[in-house]
Image (cartoon, rainbow, N blue to C red):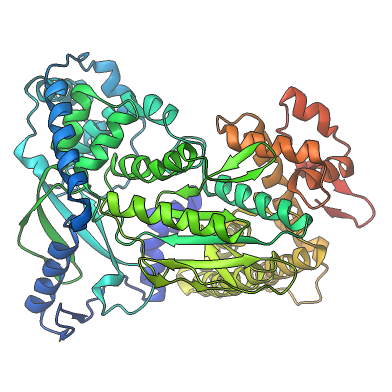
Length: 593
């Protein structure tokens, strides 16, 4: 097993997790009591399973619309019926063997199966016989527009979110495990609709879109804040928490949003029929529940669910742009920054904040969504002391915060990295102890250093430097703190004294320091910006170059290029920004950068 771990992907390999649980005696699915809908603790297996089932029955229901918006409900049903009739007259290109083969190439490994035990690996090993069968099956579905009965059966795996009490089922997330063949059909549909869908979405929703990540949102938000902070203008950021977004999406309204985004015809109808009816069993730590029926559920964790949800949430940005609402940086107007249902709104005046809140609440009500007014927070980013004004959402007051964790990074009201660094250092210290405990187990002794270095790169480095490409002016003191954590791990792994020369430790292990990881991430991100299809990202970067503000990300990138003697302007103009910083060396300090 240790040899397998050495030759594979470390944390991304199932062998690592098996080994970790075995050696450290940590089992994620050990049974534990949960509370039922009456808030009573359930200890017996039968009562626990019943509590899980009742919980998911309740949340997998679309919220009722407000009485004063009943007309919207009627309109959606009427328009949906009209679109459905149009879709039924559509003709579609048949599925080919080559299409199936293309989808099979993209299949991952070790993915959980649904109600039956068939997994991706079995399909891939099936050869031409299975490929032909799938091709015939999918063409039959497209022709008859009926789903196989087995595709309606799904299992929900209930997973603790690692937030709050395990006893409270509100802190569980349900992941739908569907039939493998239905997932392949979804992948095929996604292949056909992706280009159309993405071209009709705004540049301010970055979830489930190729070539985009949380870095896009963080770069845009940090750049906006840096711009206004330079001119001493306070920025009010509202961080929205969309309550049970997936579980309670209004399917018919989502289908209208897909149609508006160019996804229509037969494939549109198939997407609807794959979600309109489900027979669900809940997989719990103590066993599976009996099946229950659920209508019109967008199934979280399925292939298309992320795209359906992201597209519907993006309609908030469409509404903002239509009403000409959005904070401007240069000529770029930013409505909201969304990553699935994680939404950040930035404004610089009380009036614009309240206008944005009003429009957001109207959007929420019209789509049967609900923003959690207790978890939604406001933060005023400014160098000076500022007075807070009352803000409300759903008739409840929004609380102000001094810091907020958004997409893995912690932003604070002073626009510093102090809170983020403290959090990263704490997480890194725990990770160091966990990896060292793993490598010191007798079972690992023969290959402890090799395994330790592999996990150092696979786990510790990503946890320290996640989203570091969006940081600007991080400071040498912080970089030294990161170096200290890395050196602490390496010296403990090699059983070296603390006094061992740092440069020798880095050199012996083939590791470079924190500055290197940050600069390399920034260089890769620069390459992505100038070659990105995200025009908002490119426009923000271009504005930074033209304004030449000393606090902005682009200004720091120029400084980095100057230090390693690479002509930044030429790189930007020619879009040849991908370079290897590992060879750059700071001769004055003798440390790799």
